[in-house]
Amino acid sequence: MTSKSNFLFVEFPKLLESLDPLTEGAWGTMNVHQMIEHMSYSVRMANGKDIMQLVTPVEKLPIVRDFMLSNKEFRPNTKNSLMGDTPDPIKYPNIQDSLNELQQELADFKKYFDENPNTTLMNPFFGELNFEEWTHLLNKHAIHHLKQFGVQV
Image (cartoon, rainbow, N blue to C red; front, side):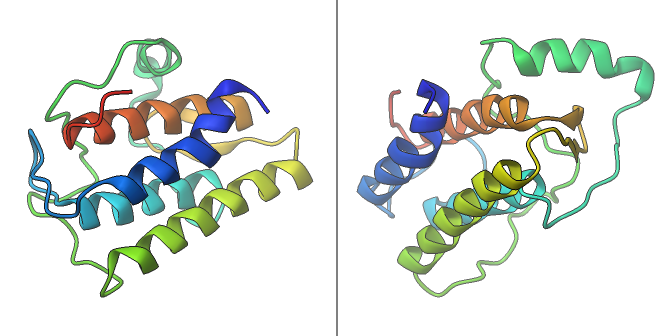
């Protein structure tokens, strides 16, 4: 398992489990519970459950993909044009159920690409991504939200 895969599948869930649910974010409007469910939604795109259409103009794809594949972090308060001004309502009444869902979505992500190793899936901002590209992006996204809640990675 690569270090990015290990972080995503093993370390990230552990860090989320150790995060105090009452921790306030340094930016944005999501609380810890909403952020965990937000990450599940992101992984659902990567595991083929939520099929997305490209929203980035095709001529801008090379620039945004270069950023996505770089080690540059998302800036605090990076706006997601697919999200409203207020976070989605929580799906599960407790954080543990939301964490369980995230872990299942991550397992389904790995399983999807184990069974379909040469495929790509659409990311609405960065285009068609393979397993390594999705893993890189999900790592970048996870680190962004961990830092939002004061976890240094």
